[in-house]
Length: 457
Image 1 (cartoon, rainbow, N blue to C red):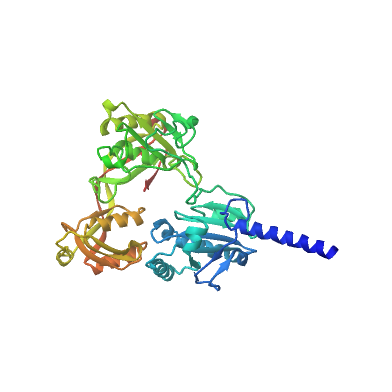
Image 2 (spheres, one colour):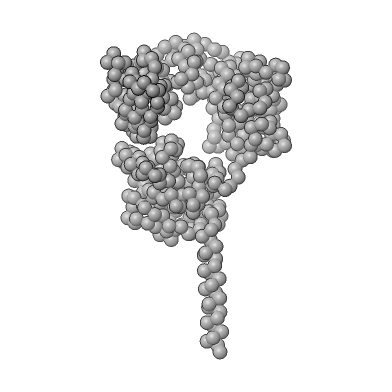
C-alpha cells in the first residue's frame, strides 16, 4: 500500500512540474522573474550550433536582437564587441538576427565581422525572434543573470550599465516593448499632457506647454515646425506644434530655422550650419543628456487657428525659450567646414541615368552597398547624413543634374570605405570650408564669464 501511495505522489509531483514547465513555454521574459527556457538555433561563430538557457548557467547572458534594416543595431556592433572583450568570461553576448527570406542578414553580419574583427556569436533564428518572444522592433536586448533571472529588457545597454549589474545594482534603462505590449500611449490629434495623452496632466512646467521629459513618455520630433500644408501627414490641428523628448539646442533650431535637423537635401543646406554653436560657460543645459535623463524637455504649442502660420509660431516659440531659458541667440556669418561631394567630368557623363521609363531599382542594403538605377544623387547624401550625423554637413557640388545609375560596394558605417567606393565611380568627398549662417547661443550678458565653445550635432 505504501509503495502505491508513494508512486501516486511522485506521479502527481512530476505532472505538476511538467505543467509548470509547459506553461512557462508560453511566457515571455519579465524583469525579476526566471527567463522562460528557449533554444537558440543556427548559431554561427560559437562552439555550439544550438544552445538553450541552461547552457549559459553561471554567467551573465545578454541577448541582443537585431535585423538587417536596423542601422542603430549595425552601428552598435563595435561597441558591443568592446564590451564583450572588457567583461570576458563573466558575460556572454549573443546576437540574435531576424532571418530574412533572401538570407541577406548572414552576409551583412559576416562582412561587418570581418571588417571590424567582431567576436560576438550570432544566432540567425526567426522562430525565437518573432514567435517565441514576439519581438517586433530592434534593437531589443534581454539581460539575464547567472541564475537565469531576467534583470533588464531595453533597447540600449553600455559597459557602465553592465558593470552595475555585476555589482548587484539595477541601473536605469530605456524600456523596450514586444509586439503585444503597449508602450507609451500618444495620440497625435490630442494635445500633449491633456487627459493623460503621453504623460501625466500635471507634468508641465510652462504653458505653452514646456515640461521635463521622462523615459516613460513618448519621443517625437518632427522635421519641420510648420509642415501642415501636406494633407497626408495625419495632423488635424493646423495650429499645433509638438516636439517631445528634445534638447534645448533642438528647440532653438525649431524656433529660429523652423526645422531640425537641416539635412543634405534641404533648401537651407549649405546656407545654414546644420546645428547650433554654443558659446556658454555651461553647455550641459543646452546639450541635454538622454543617458542620465537630464535637461531633456517636451514642448507643445497651440495657437489660435486665425493666427496659425510658420512665422507666427516661430516667433511665439522664440519668446517662450527666451522667457524660460534666457539665452541670447544671434545668427552670424562664419566660415564652417563641410564635405563637398564632387564629380569628375567623366563621372558626370557615366553616372547619368540611361533609363527612359523612370523606374527605380534599388538592390541590397546601404550598410554593405547597393545598386541603383534612375535614382536621385541626393540618396547618397541622405545616407551619409544618416550614418555620419556627427560629421560636418555633406553638400552636393557634383554639378550632376537629374538621376543617376550607380553601384557601390562598401562598409556603410566606415567613412573611408565609403570614400573609396565613391572614387571607383568618379566621385570624391573633399572637406572644405565656406561661409554659412550659424545659430550662436550665448549666455545672458549678466552671466557672461569665461566661455567654452563647442559645435553640437
